[in-house]
Image 1: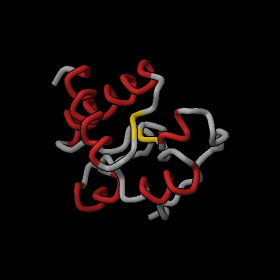
Image 2: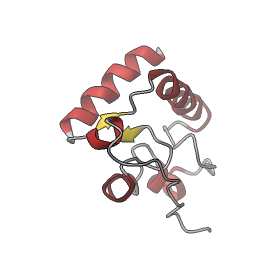
Image 3: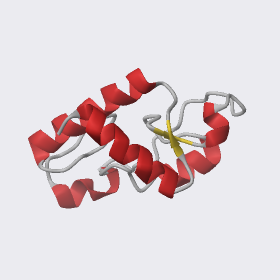
Image 4: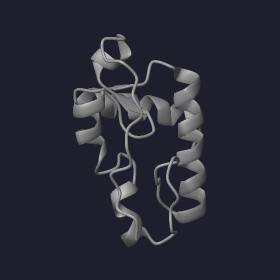
Length: 106
């Protein structure tokens, strides 16, 4: 799939959830390329900012959008990798902070 096409799909998805894609489109397109690479490698779009095992069942928590994203956006204004953000984050009303890794080490 073309990264621009997936960008439009993810943008609509984000809007349906009351969130947004990061306003830095170049950054978002890099993340999307990582999602597409992971889909080629593993058969699913695992978070490009985390190491996937290649076992879909083990990685189901990090298939984008990961299960941690909603809580991360509520608390930090953005998900772990920064693909999905709140409107306030994009407007600069929420200061940038590193989002801690919520995934337990296995």
